[in-house]
Image (cartoon, rainbow, N blue to C red; front, top):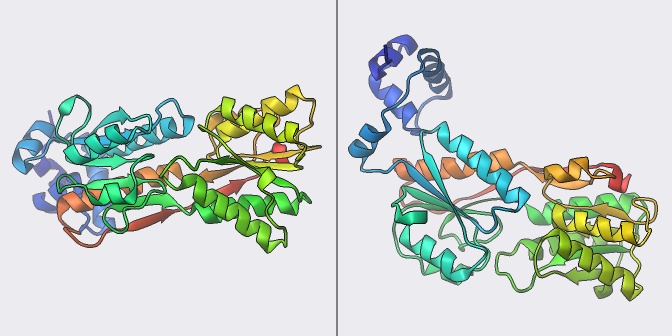
Length: 338
């Protein structure tokens, strides 16, 4: 026999309205009550009628997730976490890849639609090409939550880690191992998202704190954030004679590519060059040596972004000021800097 809202309410000892609020993820429910209702839902294996809910609420039950690169391990992991977190809210996630193309980002952002043209209740988007000015020109429509470093200057909710602090933490770790010629690989002046800029700022902040002047010869830009780009950048560093004793790559993919270039030149890691990345992707945990990195709390990013969306849809925050949610990160020290 299929459980109903009434059955859940009786089991949890609450009103049907309270059960409905929990099912629809309305924020104004006490934590203890929400836990009791959720336990009853799990015990009775209650499943909301998504079609009926959509008709009653005038919503599709669909959420768009717009990412630059699905082949990126970081974004792939994030998409999986968003999908799981959305499922717990009875939402379906539709994923779109933009390749960092400004026109694709603008079209998806302005239209409030997911791939295939479906109207969505809200969008989570990680823009690479759109500037704050572009985001300001967005017309009204479905709620939008930004993922990552790009800022809409207070126009849209945003969820990110503190990249400046994270990069400074990692650079200070390299300094603590006795390294002084620390290279930075991953500058991207051609992008508007601000990620590389913030990590570069954190890197320089840590160097300044140690009394070390920045050396432009040790700061290498890249066209993309892939392994091949990391290998090419490492080759540029070694051929230039700059000869760093540590390398901070702005993503783990760049660091894995740099590791390959160092191995091909017979340079020991970490005996001659310490190496660190950013993102804590699975490949870095199994590389030889295993990769020191910054681990953003990706699960918390997914949850916080969907919480922002749920609150906007529920009207709890309505048209109130946009929020900037900063999620925790941690430094993971492994063999590549030991």
